[in-house]
Length: 393
Image (cartoon, rainbow, N blue to C red; front, side, top):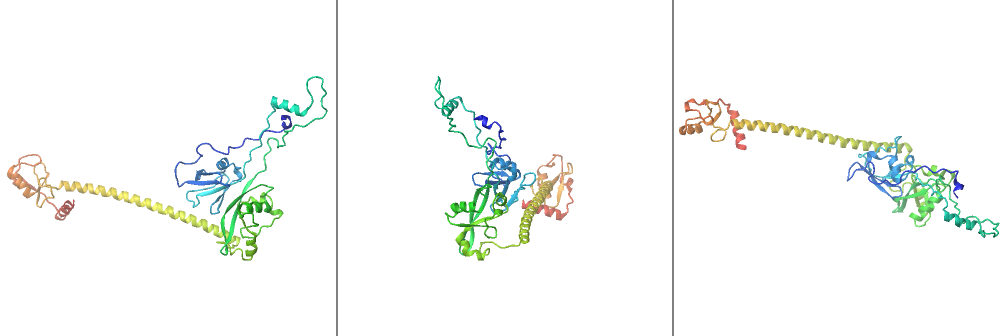
């Protein structure tokens, strides 16, 4: 059996579809710089740092061909990668969840193993019935192996598949309202109106007849131009499905009976897109300016606190220097200092009472009389201010 496939080469190794351990670029715990990304079929959801989101990483996580990957947010915004494979996501974006779409990497068919010795013996029994040891006559009829494989040879990939999201609309209270999205798995053969109608009808409308419409709610015809992946793989092409009976009854009023819809000229659409982007940029700048103002105010407050602490320290030293040595209060004028060590003694009455009991300096204990006291020339307004501060403390 191995000889039938000797001309085929083994397929190139494929990237792993699942990454063991922590994802590159991810951070533990909640963070404003993390963004949530989900597979287009909803089978897997991961959180990755916004600056680490690229086609190579997403291709490994979701088993997509990197060059085919694009992102769609919950609000319908589409983000494609740049030449380096990055999507330019930022923590400043309003979107925090994106759905990843792309061409699925289909694994190659299993390689054919060489027949074992037991398989060979069984095969010979099927191929040559009646042949045995001895002189028995061999059967002239050859019977092919009953388990001969019809699979494709190694290295031949299955046809590339892709996902297309179809918007589901329901007619209610005179308007069409979007009730959800339905992803349809397509390939080159199944990418046509008939197949999409059949799948969406069975899965979302309980088998009722549906109509496939475009972004302006106009019916998409089943023609050669609407068949194949070239038409259906375009990420910017919005395709929706509605009930056929509702479409027949309300098509004359499209699109004004669609909730929240307007008919725009292409230039007006582009203008609205630019206005929305400008609004987001202005909002981001406002937030940045507010943060800068807060940082500036914090810096000014810290500087004022430092100056106030320094002023309080100087004030306390001045108060301590002009405090009466005996009553420990701001001296009552006239104030005096000692002639020996020139320290501020304080109030005249306090010093007089001290000298009546012991005629010596309270600091250095040198001999001192009332006549030897030195008057301190103090400016009265300054002295009054010091007295008020001392009383407030």
